[in-house]
Length: 185
Image (cartoon, rainbow, N blue to C red):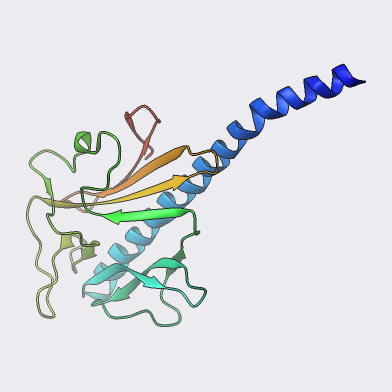
């Protein structure tokens, strides 16, 4: 009986940390995919309503953070599409997030990431744009990156990136843990 119990304890010590890392990776991919969906929602609404839509952050009543879509910027109002983030997920708009090999990610040929840490807006043509006094002109050749990270209780940090290309295409990337990025869509 003691030998069986010892074997079970050894197996638990090996599998539980791996299981926790897998759950953390799944949560991170969930957030990245839903953030990509939120961006797509903003893009579709911008074209449909012939105005610009913005994706930005808000502090929730629970004290946590979340992303929401709103016409012409503004603050969150009930009914706006909302993506709440769990307390274990961190985010960073723009480059300089500290993600491994972040510089290997691109937004396409002839495209560079915006220099300021802004979240994407989409104009009436469905293209990423920069808000300038109630208009949102397209910045040719400029894309956006938002990085998400999740550190599990075992100390393992997972990374995901959501890229908006200059043409408005939304890409989801995850890091494999050794600094290589894999496109998920």
